[in-house]
Length: 575
Image (cartoon, rainbow, N blue to C red; front, top):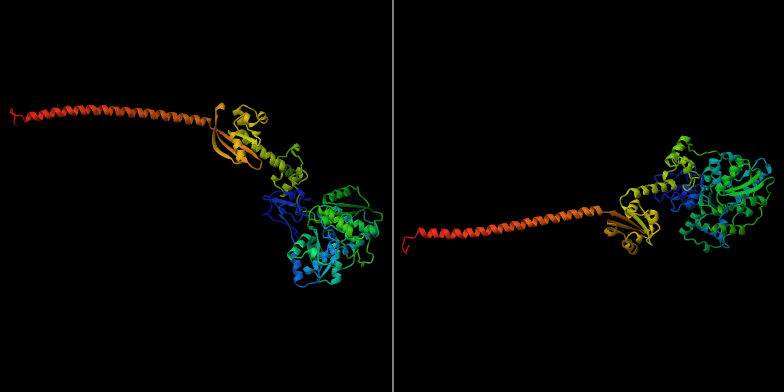
């Protein structure tokens, strides 16, 4: 059963889930996180950590609603953690029972009833005294961890079912096999446990969490504060109600028969539990009864408890206030050696360990071929650079998970661009202090970057355009600016970077282009002057020619007129 899933569309490549997952059961593919079911221990830390709500819990809510809608006998089995989570008022727990009846549940019982019999089963193991160490098996996530990653710890695990399964057995015996038992708690692993235990019989038919219970109550417009008092059904499990907080199992055993020859110890938090297992492997811990829990503080801090982190302290106070620290001697007996026996099965992770050559090649691709480059900073989520390289070989990681590597790559690329570009690049802050000064700027202004960083921009060039950018909070694009004292003509883009409140100036040196343009302009002007002179001279020549033609024409007219008159003259006055 895949109890956890990822919404790829919501995943924003932050990889926080990878960093927080204690067993790295997450694969990164195409910049998104994917759930590796056969490696996950269902601790739920990724569910709590994801800031984008991209990690989702596969719910049985619709199944529970269906059971109620069909008229089945439905029994809510409330995890002991409910005392702290819903116990913030004097009648909070009884009001919750009333609210569950309004939702349609036939009976409301407490999982702590099953914890009574689990405690008795633990005490039986203590009396027998055959186990070197006895590690409690009530936390499903720790059981998953043992079966997948610490199979050598199985001989130390108490072969006892969890209170949830024990309670399911009790309720099926009391109400019949057709009754529907619906467990409500704060754990992400209980759903898988319920499915696994069905090979022995269906003891728990559906698993809900406190978060979705709150949403369900909101959907039905049920206000806990407005619900009336509702009495407890079933026996009071007393001290066994402390199973929801760290040390609760120890308190229950102590209140009854005690620990015999065993020392008592409780370890919460999956990382601490792994350290415990390493100590046991080394033979450093012997003759201990050890309570373990995946969640720091116990089930009241489960990933599906709902509420703020600060609520965990209040929840512990509420739980301690409401629990009678005595053992219920009159509760029904159950054979802890048979009915409550749990079998642990080795199901080691399926990832293949890469060869040393493959690991070294992955380190080389990460830019970490030499030991001094292996920072082991843990920013990627893996304890060491070698662990990350192994994950890459197993197709569970990507190169860009390494923050120092990506930073060095980006910085190297940036430095290459800044060093080879012919453009002058100057970055200043809001006080016009120089924060970036590239090689081209050093050459042009004959000043080193180190010196430039110690002086204001005004000591190097006129800052008027940068001041305008900060004043208007708007970039200036393609503006030509001349610095006569440097003999420099620039085409400027001054970009306002709002998030960093700084200005990036990119100054393109166009001095040579301007000189060429001026030379071309001068040549064009000279050509125009020459052309004008030719035109003027042509006009003068044309005018002279016209004048000569006019004189010649006049003389010709006179001459021809005289010739005409002489032809017709007959020597007399009359023609």
